[in-house]
Amino acid sequence: MTIEPRIREELHTLRDQVRHFQGGMVASVDGMVIAHDLPDIEPDGLAALTAAAIGVAKRLTEATGQGSFEESLTRGATGYIAAYSAGRRAVLTAVASTDTNVGRLHLQARKAAERIGALVDTAPHR
Image (cartoon, one colour):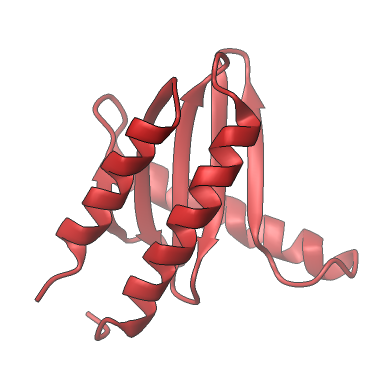
């Protein structure tokens, strides 16, 4: 049984829980899309960019003695892109407008990332 429908359900739940949430994606740490809910964003490109950004974020946390990577937030002129570690093998990327409550985004996305990580880590490797 594939985990993609269960992950897509988590993304839909996140959309329901966070106002101004524009979409989300779960990808492997090496940049392969697992599931997405991104109506206006090309998921393969975002997965590759997220993998590169996470690579830099991991080096930053290690170089500064802050432990292993957990999350990263980027703010642009019209919105936010947040990436959350989802277990050992995946990352949750969330896209939201500037009107979103970032605290609520973090609260709900962290919980979703934990559940998604459990799904991905226990699934057989593809």
